[in-house]
Length: 274
Length: 153
Image (cartoon, rainbow over all chains, first blue to last red; front, side):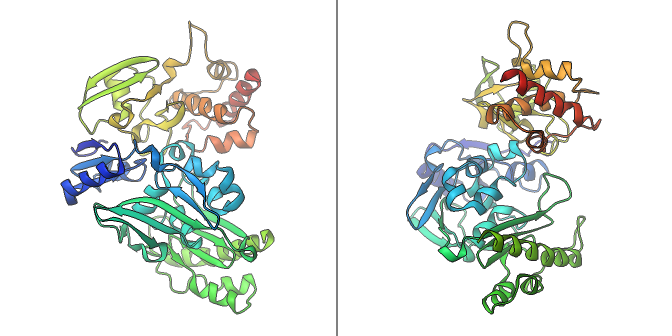
């Protein structure tokens, strides 16, 4: 399988990438690691006329400590997030979840910013960053703006980014002292599959993978926890407010059941790490 | 478009379609046909090669993305007719049946051992989650990876 024809442009800087995106408008797509976009293009589910390769923007690959938060360059690969000592110490949920994405080959190419900007509700890292209350930094022609991740995802593969806007950085606050417990649960059919359902927990913040058109917070679970409910009782609310799809892998009812089971396991594991 | 790749230490410049995949560049332009196309969907790992020393699935990388980078295929592992330790281990541990997954398996293990020279059996099995063997001959493949780690230590 090969993608339909397109024109390939390699950006030498973020400014050049944005200029190219402005020039080509809706016909262009940014390409980071390519492990979400290229498979879609090979299946002809996406057919951009211009590809703007961000692979040369090495200055957008970093993980740095800013005291109250960690800043991660959008082009930092899953492999580098997985193996970061800083993240293992400060944000073990994120480092662990990055190591659960795909397989080693995919983690050598795929990037955290690409995963977030692609906005696939079945992807792991968008939900993990939602549980962590991350802030996203996007650069456009008029400079940069900060976007709370809770307002970022608009629907299946849809975000608030303008077509020419470039996600440049992800800022993740360090969990407070009482909220250090974490867990990531992912249920798959085969080792490298997307999650049928996934759950990310940091403290009492709970986010769900693949339970709606976007990653979402399990608000009813969080409310129950805030009222002092035990993990198993809070987890009973896991499917409230969700709109999971029925597809070849699982029915909606099965996903709702999985969400309750996995949230319960995640809350129990997080409590054991608190 | 013009691309310039270093494949197994040799510079190859070619004029290719912008949409050409790396695996097609290797097989059809560089004439290195050991790298197999299996699933063509980033799942099976048969097309695994090294890009700047790290395993990647060459069906999901554009030749254009690899321009300016170093590629190693299984043909590039042996030196002066002496097999690489991972190749030798596959030979000695009978790490293959039909052989279709073998080039990808070997390259995935070379990358794995660079990152973790002394893996446990569990780490090898998890480290090979991106490579499928249609003969289900995983046992000897894992044994070969562990034997290669032993030899290299």
